[in-house]
Image (tube, rainbow, N blue to C red; front, side, top):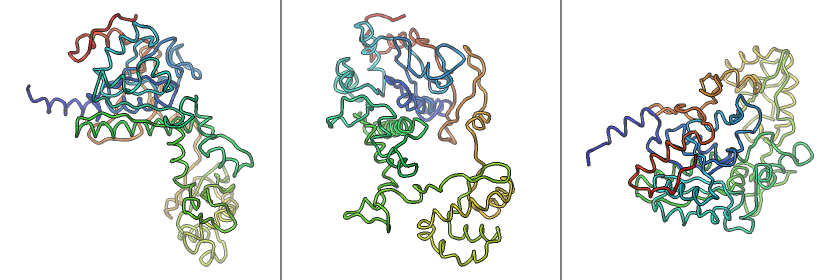
Length: 402
């Protein structure tokens, strides 16, 4: 065979580091689609299987088209959509024909549904022995809860998020974003690329399991395991062992300035000395609350209160100017609309202009791009099935779904 290494390298430079990787996307809502959006942005050919009106995210909130909510315009970008009913014999045959052409299969279905559809790992591996197969669900497959349904709210409550909210606000709560969904979507994408790296070195595929509860527990315990991690536990004086005290301070929040809001965060002891000295606080250089890093953490509540008392004396821009000069971390408080207004515009053939959310990482040689706008439901069915029919790896599909 001719050496195509130079051609492949050039293609990767044009469309991203995952150019040449094909992904079969059996996910819905946000967690899985966010994972596959990242893979697609980085050059993978993501084939989204949709049926029965399309993915749920297409109707999550308002949008410019009946099939394209504002969420879907970015979540489905760079993907190709095929309209295939997995529960029908014809649809199952189409997917079975497609699997051998795919390097990666990603699913967020519950385990029993995958088995019933013949899309569990063992069944897929029969069709593509070296497949990288990523399966995400609420709870570990080896647990008694493996078959239970789970969404972001459920996993936030089960993974300690609601507990830390109670410690601050007095009753359990949920963070007002789909926190667990998005964290687990990132974990899925990272695990898939790690498995692809292993495949590139060895030729071996493998099964990846991302239980949301497990991923979120690890995420939350990175800092909130705190003194409870040691055995026996080592709590701070007067506190429970678990939970990172500074993060759980009720005083940890942005501060009002003369004309707006700012969040400034003196992280090092020197920052506190400089800030309070600048504000004319007597004895700032000798305050024992920030003699070292351990002291600043132990005295977070009072330090936050003192900073909040100072901030109304100046405008936001005056504080930002000072903090830049002093090297103190600080920022103006941005609104969601501020973030939207900064986004670049792209053209979608079905809806016109829309704003493109940023890629999560920048690559110097293989930058992520928007190569395809978010598809309509089944927009690429014929195109993909023509490719499958022409592939030497795939069996002929039994029929085509229009």
